[in-house]
Structure formats: structure tokens, C-alpha cells
Length: 477
Image 1 (tube, rainbow, N blue to C red):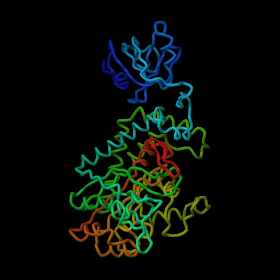
Image 2 (cartoon, rainbow, N blue to C red):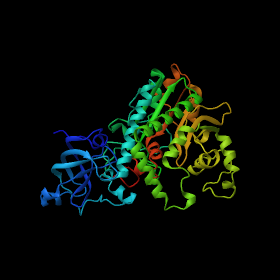
Image 3 (cartoon, rainbow, N blue to C red):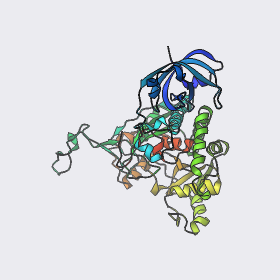
Image 4 (cartoon, rainbow, N blue to C red):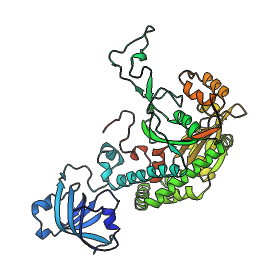
């Protein structure tokens, strides 16, 4: 008999004479009541066992974590909290679980403990909910761009280009590390490497994406990216997923419009399709915050925060105006920022970004026209010669969630910027060709997918919104 998902059984509009469900035991009470979950929903279905007519040996094997198959009738539940339950007529143990050794017991576990058991943490309510929300958000990303006529492009994971110019890249090589070949200058001879040159894992698909946008009009990438940045923080991963649209003929204002519309769409999609999971995660967050001092607690619940983004227009503020606000703030004057703001040109930290969103404007903020010195080489230089057409979107509780810009479409200006930063023109000859042949105004942005999942789920550590986090000194699983 084909099994039915727990979600579909709970959403049934009628009782059924015979159903089959398969899943994992969450709890087993009084030798009679099994809470069964199959991952299709945060909710368990109660399965009532006739323990008087079930072998003791079988009852002993119904332990937390065990995989079972139950057959019986779907009947109206006598207990509170669920509409239906399964009155079990047949029960089969598909896979035993040693109750004394199974780490995911039905009790509260610390997030650190769960990270150490990342292969099993998805069996908890919280991580099941997070991963279902992540899946829905992923679908929403594709849905938005496909509806808008964007072309999905798979940019390379192995590349010779450093799109950010920061140099924090993982090297890819097949050379024997204990016997590296050298050239006449006694440097490593990368001509003998697999690709015949120095290559790395990508930090961004943007540069390649731009080349496709200049032929297909509007494209987006959605794939893994890597940063060899030794940041052991709650906001950084060495491996993460990036969404990067690039659009020909869009200036910075159109780019900001696109980013704002896109974010609203995916958040609304999650609210419309993940109601039970988000409600659970909201409750989890409220419980977690009870242990914090009142001053550190969020002013809004999770669902209020998500609706706050949907209901409030994003405030657009120049970097220069933002610096004035921060410099003149009481927080800055009283030296309460970890990084004080003293002069124009400072690189804004998360604490500054959150101050602008949460304390000053009390709405999502888009900062634009940043100093050229703190931004990447490919951003369009403004007429003042000192700022670029960059933009960052700032969210409550998280700071920067999107970074983008109008790209520098002028060949001569781009070459001069590359020279000033010591970027090799020969390495990026193909990128410069887009400015040689039919160049036009174009723009794009990057959204770290995990930052989006972090915001939508209300989690506070980015390691908890990706199945198997990769961080400094950690590549377990």
C-alpha cells in the first residue's frame, strides 16, 4: 500500500478507512500514543496503538528516532491539538534507533550541540522548519526571476578571476603539494597545473554574469560561492549561496527598484507558503529572548518583522547623509559604537547599519553612492570623482542583506580603475571586451541566500540556516 504524507493526512477533509504512513518516531507515550513525523510538516500525527494486542518486543522497539510504518484508519482525534489521528491496525519497524545512544532526544538542545550533530539536527522541529523555509525561499527566487523573463545562468565555480579584488579565495590545484614544480624564477609553475594557470573557487558569478546580460538582456545566477575569509562570526561562512541578477540598460535607480521588489516577493511567498513553520519559529524566538535583558530583546516578533518589510517603503539615503546621521548621533558622541564614526570615508560596520534601520529610520534602508575607495573596481564612478554608484540594502536585526551597483560601462574609466588597483588587464581581457563591443549602462546586485534565510527564520547564527556549515577549522560532515 502506498503511504500518504503526514501533511496530507492532517489536511484531510474526511476520515478514511485505511491509510498508511511512514516516518520517524518523535515520542511514544503510555505504550499507546506515537507522535509520528515524516518531514512534510512541522506537525506530528498521533498514531494510537492497541498495546494489548501488540507484541511486547515490538512495543520496546518503538523508540525516539526509529523509522516505522503504520497502517490503520484515519479517525477524528479525541485529544486536543489535532483534528485526526491514526487508529493503528498494523505496525512495522523499518529501522531501529537505540534510545540510549540517539542524540536527538525529545528535550531542549543547545544550538552548539546541534551544530556538532548537523547530520541529525534536521530531525528536530526547529531545523526541520528552517530547512523547509529555505527550500520554499529557493523556489521563490527562481519563481520571481522566471516570471520576469530573466534567463538563469550557471556561472563557473572554478575561475581565474577575483571579482571582488579582495584576494580571499580558495585555491584550486592538482599539483603535488609536497613537490611543487618551480619555474626559472623559482616561483610555482602553474603552467603545469590542471588548468595551466592559477585558479580558485569563485567568490562571485558577477563578472561572467555581466557578459551574458550584455547579450540576453537580463539574467540571474543562483549558486555556491566561497570566501577564504578567516572570520569566525555568526554572520560569515566559507561556503554559501549567492543570488546575482544582472540587467542591461538598468541604472542604479532601476537596480534599487528591482532589489526591493524581489525581496518583497520572496518574503511574501514564504509567509504565504510556510505559515506553520514560521509560527513555530516565531514562538521559538520569543522563548529564546526571555533569557535576554529587556534592552536586547527584539521590538517586533518574527512575523511582525517580516510584515514590517512588506508594509514599509525602503528609505533611500546617500552614504554622505548616513555618515552625517551616524556622526551626530548620541550613540556615537557617547562612544557607544565599537567603531566610532569620525569622518567621511569610513567603512560602515553592522552596528552602524542596524542603527540606521532600527533606531533612526525605523524601516529598511537603501544606502547609495559610497566612497570609491571602499568599493570594488567595477562600480561606476560618479561625476564627483570620489563616489561610485553602489547600493546596499539594510534590514533590521541583520544589517546588510544586499550589495549591488551600476557597473562601470566606460572602457577607459574601467581600465584606469583597474590600473590604480593593480588588477591585471590581461587576466580580465574577456571582461573588458563587454566594454569594447556594444557597451551600455547595466546594473546588478548580490544577495547572500543564507542572510535571507537568517532574516526570514529569525535565527541569529548563519551556521544554523545551511545544512552543513563550512567555517574556519570546520569541514565536518
